Amino acid sequence: MVALNDAMKDAFADVLSPLPGLTREAILRAIDLKHATVVVPEWGGNVRVRGMTAAERDAMLAAVAPGAETSKRSDSQIKAYLCAHCIVDAHGASLFADDDIALLQQKNPQVLDRLANEVLRLSGIGETGVEVLEKN
Image (cartoon, rainbow, N blue to C red; front, side):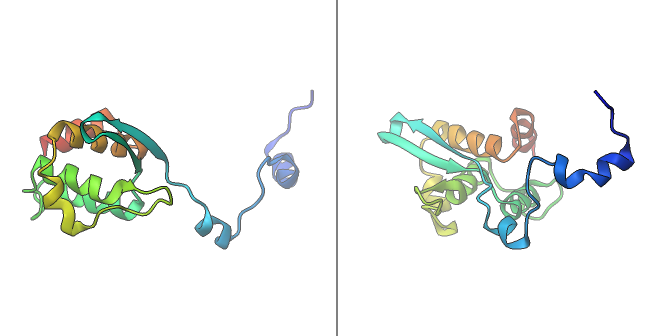
């Protein structure tokens, strides 16, 4: 087998790449948010959640940043925010709005924990991230 040097790799990049080059339109059209179904027996069924968009993640992280004016948000407010934005229907549309956050805070905290943790996992924020958020 012949090893390719960097110059050869560059020359044959189009042939060697297993994926096609993407256009702007293809990138913007791509459905790239992960989804999962969470069993919620307390509510009598399943709930579909998706990972946060980059803008949603920025807003959530800004809300819990130490020293931020909004960092006084409670654990239940943060988790209700995640649920309001990331509980979705079969088409990916949010079932709730920001006006529903206070209503979601009235739900079982263990359910909110379960759903929020799944949203964070789908968003690339693992258990360590959850612990950091809870400390703030």
